[in-house]
Image 1 (spheres, one colour):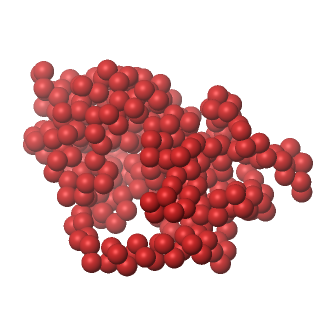
Image 2: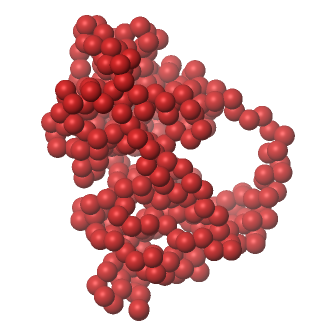
Image 3: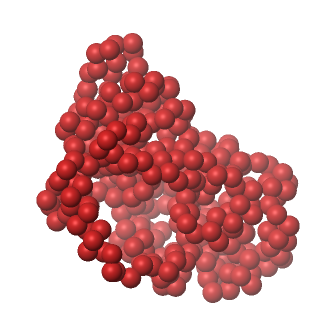
Length: 335
């Protein structure tokens, strides 16, 4: 079947296209890619059209790798979901055909899957590729009484105690860079306890994120009188809410602000028509996985497919050898 490709699909067309894709997430939006593009060479979103009328897009970041020795294309930014996006399910043959064209242009290529897509939107694995399996944790958004019943007994008690604490709950829809000053000091103090520093964000990152993606974000704040006790930032797209950032104060366990910042945002989400809450993957952090499961979250599989040519494979092996004796992070504390 003949395939036509438009390599110059514009960002406005890209954003409009996503509105017709029922399984698109906040991570497919051009605003998410712009927010994470500073260390990359370019943002690219080709559109594929087949003779039978099927079509799809593939948002990508192009970046130099191994100190500029090669270029890699990534269909997904900062470990967010990626891969082909379409208003309907593509066939496996169409998926592989689209990716084959991309790999001719970018032999070193990775595609992050989308656990919510109606078709397998990553390529099949050939001799030059590897497939990594993972999962996210997803919670149905229900009316408040039914939502609490999904929790285990411990979390139900914690939510009741948080109610007695008397937090003031504030919701900011479409936060702007000016709102970063409200929560950043708390985030900085919270992230200072993490032993793994890779995903710690600076103030400039949040200003950039809110500038590019603000209309699709919601900021939930929990106040104890005039002191911020915790915040949660989520991305909203379609009927899906995606958990992005969380920070709580030193009294979090005593006041149970953590469970509070799950239950109250879920109430707001239900009232505004959202039906799924994605806690995001937790990797090998068993404690975090168990914590999310205590609210009723269940795993949903996803995958990452990595293609490397011989040069990319050789450089990956060299880097792996160089890191063999490097200290391994004990654990990631926080969110």
